Length: 444
Ligand code: HAM
Image (cartoon, rainbow, N blue to C red; front, side, top):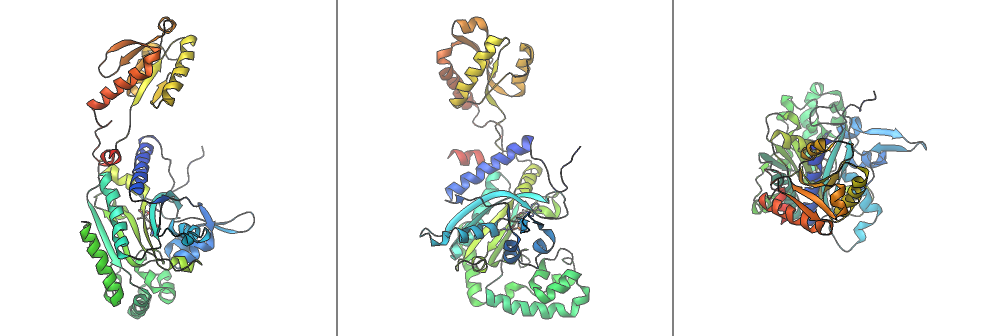
């Protein structure tokens, strides 16, 4: 038997249904915040990620899936979405549009060759939001609040929003010197990668997965203490707007992010759950004001974030959050002979095209087993066909909730079913007893 690759997984059954609910939530919230959907390719020229994310990041140096295509081009499966969006922004000259900033959202698979564990996969899904073209600190706060609101609507409550500032170029130039001088005496205590980082990109030492428990790491100087006055004022404004939006946050100087493109505001959102361990960071993001220039475009300040979809589902599961999954069908069509079957398939098509969720018998079961199947599918109504009734232009309808049975004229079937379904809907406002706010939010 051929098995799936390490670090990949199949999404099916109730997990797939939850995935669709969250996808719908993202579409709805993106609509309300006025973001446009964008899809970029899953593979890009390797250079995009090498230049965009930084040669010395763990992601680029250890985790990318690189290969040569049949024309010997160096190709990389995208490890994240931001670089591709920026490439698209530049290539499609979106910066030339008078309508700025560009507010874009996306979802799709990302690939990182990491050590797989619960909540960490080699193929994983992200959804992300990016604002390209605005440097307003108010946008930083709005983007963070958007991420928080997505989590809140899903029903997850115990979250912690960590924010930090990596300052401007001047801040980082001063800090780079500080950190180099700080780590130099400890060079022999650092892992081999960090020894190279100390020379090439000392800031990356701070998010090393090997050395992060070392005492010297914990005592290292913090960038927040080196912010220039401009960066400091900017960061204070972001915090002011976050307070206006009632977003609880903590300034955490350990948040440095694992990609080179960030400056100014960076943030991560953790979900506080006992069983998720190190994989409790559900969302990460920040400002990347220089990435468009670095990839060949005009000066364009940007900010955004991405969620780990897989982690999101895992945390909903562990928090025992029930999503509004539609586990029911409107009606199941039952029949026994060929003549009834021909009517069944035609009726099913008409009702589906009129907007109802319909299924019908396709396994040659006897009538008794068909009743059982209707129950398995949680069918609200049963449409029971028999040749005699059909000759007279009628069908038998059973309300599977009240158990009431009635003979209904085929001409009035749709109208009758809709009335019955309305009555059922009024009695139970949500199909299942979910404990999130998605249903209410989408109804509004
Ligand atoms: P990132 O922090 O590398 O940022 O990833 C964002 C989120 O993706 C993480 O917080 C985590 O939930 C999820 N994630 C990352 N790696 C894995 C994995 N191996 N398995 C499962 N989930 C994972 C970025 O990717 C940036 N592009 C975010 C961003 C957008 N910054 C600005 N705009």
